[in-house]
Image 1 (cartoon, one colour):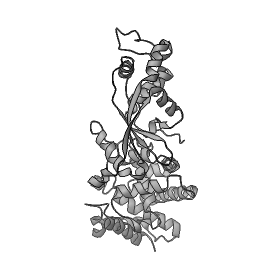
Image 2: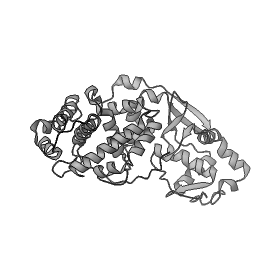
Image 3: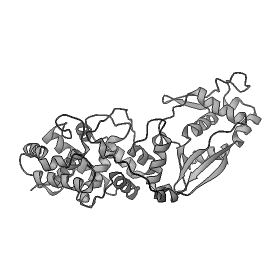
Image 4: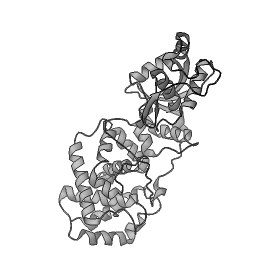
Length: 363
């Protein structure tokens, strides 16, 4: 696992509109198979310990409940009060689960039984609090009498299971975002991080730590919302002539790349070197504001064109002279500018701007 520290630094884009909104068809939702199961807390804890239900923070946002709120959930179990269902997604290939809704509840129960409460990346004893008048107030799980411990272990947690989520990521995207309407919606890459967990996901994170890349991205620290990782994925999906096969929408194109490469790249070391050398070349020729138009925000459409064309020049050793002059001319080209506005992830515009960059930079 990559040692990975992220910050909530915000990256603003000039071309936000290219994050297209995809309308789900009725037939899409009819493809969902779901069912409800009831498992004891004992069974759920065992599934978490065996990594069958994965509660690692990278798959969801960090644990945000405080000890009082978590204590109220435990109190509900001890008081025979119902708690809301959880929603789990099941991978067909591995028979494992991700938590789509209910992560805070499952973590609260798990932490209490383990005896340690996670707060601000620190562990401290999980003593029930805020439950005045209850005999279990102020106690650790290990301090409860055996009857109360069994009561918690035998409590039933009902879960709705969405089956075979790896075959239909679009629907899981929609469900994630619908469930997050009360807070900050997950970004596309945050959802991919959850659905397509695997070696390729880890390789993207390692690429994101590449020093020359951090320079042209404009921030030394990885972005908490994973915008930077999505850009790397975007480059990977288009480089080395792959852009010629691109089909909109971009979100589905990137989903497909994640799914196809789930087990990781066999030629990862070669790709890392190309990625690093591309970033170095761009920084040395054009500087750190290369992806900004006249000093404004980061423009993903410019990013596509520059990254893919420069990578092609490195692969084929066919750069023209005076690249900075060629860059300035490209940015002033009316045909290129048309590819940077309105429907920027349309297939014709993606291919058009990359082809133009190739013409300007390469022999």
